Image 1: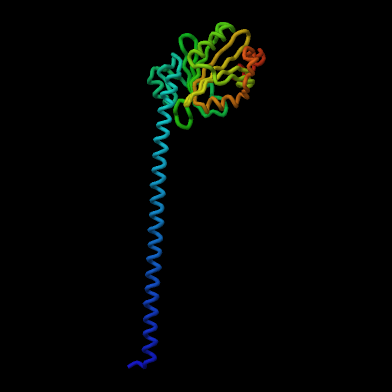
Image 2: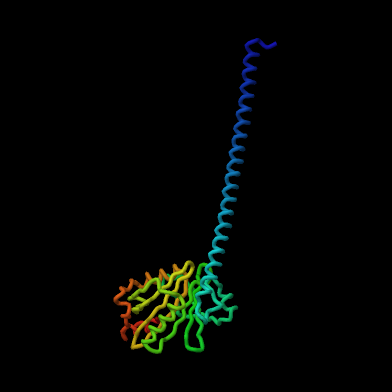
Length: 249
């Protein structure tokens, strides 16, 4: 038989081994528990991310639908079946014959441009977002028969859209001075741009997102027109017109 002291030491050793085994087991359980907790956290974060993305997609779809409805009601007659937010395929399917144009979008606007010419000589431009592919702006460009027609044109615009929300002088519309009148709505903005030269005037109607119209105003260095100068339109010089033609404006 072992001496009493040896038996006592042996018992202590076995107890220490059991304690060590228990500690190891607890450590393993702790690691497994931490891993499970981290997995649960990651799963919750992933579910929250998916839910957030789905909510944002629903909100974006709702905004796009509101934009389509509002902008369609504001389009001029040649564009009565067009709405902002449409894709190129949808616009073409509505009966418009869009062709790519070498005339690019103004600097700072990420748009792919297409054009359509009407039998009456007017030209329409369509700008589709390079990021989403959705229609972001349309332009209808035409010539007024005489300067006196500006007043009649503005009267018709007021009857159609109400009192303008802004009147602007823009000294640098791609190198030319223009006068602009704007109408702002919730999802859509309208701008009427007048270029006066050689005793005649061209007018370009823009219907676009508010952000697009806002960026255009900033890029052209537009400033509000004082009330006493509303009837004094800026006029482009022959030199400015020639330079714009040479630069492809």
